[in-house]
Length: 102
Image (cartoon, rainbow, N blue to C red; front, top):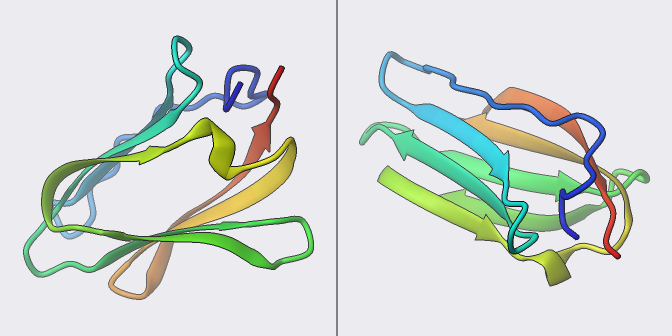
């Protein structure tokens, strides 16, 4: 269950450059993780997920405007991961992600 038993669940509303906002939430009903965001026209956003060895496993380019990025349950195995969200080549969020599936 992707993010179903995450030890640290957070809801983040972040304003960057006054317009871009990001909200990362787990979905308990289908085990997917959703990244809801609004990216201003002048901004470029990237979400990267790394394993504990620092190897990048996933990279997603964030599109401009209001969007939802779905990270499906089967994209990650059980374990501890780290993710970065960058806007305009500057890391604005760096967090730990614990993924446990049944």
